[in-house]
Length: 444
Image (cartoon, one colour):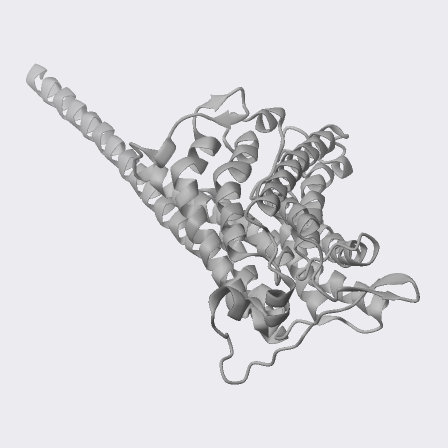
């Protein structure tokens, strides 16, 4: 009897030990699978965001003149290429290094000693930095020196974008510590690019023939783009890439909120296009294709900050407002302020980036953040934090970019001469034609 009892206890002990070991093995295996999913998810999401470079290039080429198409392709190629090297060398360190007072990172230059997880995060973040840099290209199209544009691209990717990004996304930045929320970059990425674009357009001045005197009054003259189908293709590429932008910002392939983010992203883009179409129809008497395309982008920019914390109904409203806002904003900058922005980059990314940031403080659902949005009974606390962040980033980016473009203008020169501008930057800057054999040149 005693021997039987000993055998039973021994068997039970072995069983319990085996179960514990099995549980440990299962936990380790699940963790390994989770890490693998995250690795695959973030690298694929980064590839989607990288493909947005093609979208930006096609939108800008389509909405400008044929004689500058090759120059635009070169700018979109090289702002990523030069920017990636700059972000590798110093940008990542300024954004994600050990903090100095919540303002700037101080180590991890050249991401030395990085493990696979850091390398994964770098590839996801570098494509965001490239997006911020390439936004500026559209607002400065058709009259900027190529070498000067390269200088700017390096500075924004190495300094301007990473430092304000550190404030919000590093986990130790002063704005993030206040509770500022920007899920995927309405402010961190899009407003940074938009406000830098505004500074560049101001210092650069309008294209020749854009504003003319009629009866003693300066009026805006439309300079049509040469290929609307190409611009439309660019917008669809950007919309496609935005699923990497927003859904990828869950930072995990096992995060079940991916579906929610995809839905709110889709709905906001859709109502953005609808809102811009209706507004342009009322404003101009006809539904304008370029405004409608920009409306879809405006809705995407608008939802990017709050995509994970607003409801689908909230995303419909955010996108609709963004679509209306972008048409009014484009008209305001063009007709009132006389700032020449050939593709509407300032309005789409700067203005609608701020709207999306503010919208978090209005539409955040209860439980998503420490403070619910104003419309959900959370008061104005989150709204105030969002407004502070939007204003702070505007001040940082606009002042530095204005200073940067002014220095470039006074030293190496920012703008091509009038002869080169009339001839087209394809031939004057690159010695080639984008449509060799049948390109049509004009003096305007």
